[in-house]
Amino acid sequence: MPPLYVLQQGAKLRINNRRLQIEKEDQVLEKIPMVHISQVVLFGNIGLTTPAINAFLTQGIEVVFLSQRGEYRGRLVGSLTPHVPLRRAQYERLGQPDFILEMAKGFVRAKLSHLRSMLLRHNREIHNPDISAAVDQIRQASDDISRKNSLNALHGLEGSATSAYFRAFRYLLSKEWHFERRARRPPPDPINLLLSFGYTLLTQLAFSALQTVGLDPFAGF
Image (cartoon, rainbow, N blue to C red):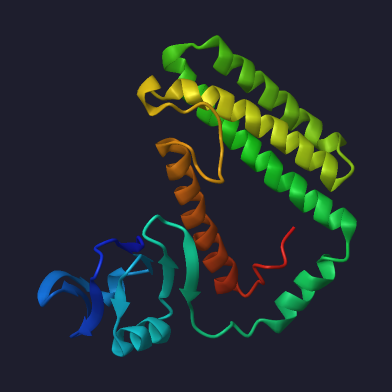
């Protein structure tokens, strides 16, 4: 089930006959069965009735609050899952540097593999030499992961490979988007704004997935 995104400013969410009803100024904009909703993401000035809040908490449907521009504000979630042994094991692993480094290597290896595949797939059509050079740099970085023996070294490797990716990424876009590089604070162009927004949503999905299985999302590797 996909998340439900609500952007209409001044809208209100209420429950009506086991359906989530979105309305504004006495006009019903949408009715959605609760069983078809996995998550609700609200942008800006959008209200919730108390019965809607109770329904979300009872059915384990997370509500994410964002600003109108997509900046994260907070979350409405139910009680913490009672998986104490799992979280205890997670906290014990935080004191094991070798485990942490291997976990981090796995994350970086997966990320670089995806970046490289993305560029290769699109470069089959445009055959851009700068994209090919970035693909080679990312491949070399992936090969070097196993030789890194500290998190700082791994972070540096990931950063340089990611920079190479975004230098190539701009060739996948038309020039009218004016995307030159990845920049976050503040995003200087529409592409950077969309990237930051996408990362915000993905972060919340990852946060929810970790909590669902009983892990502590604030104790990561």
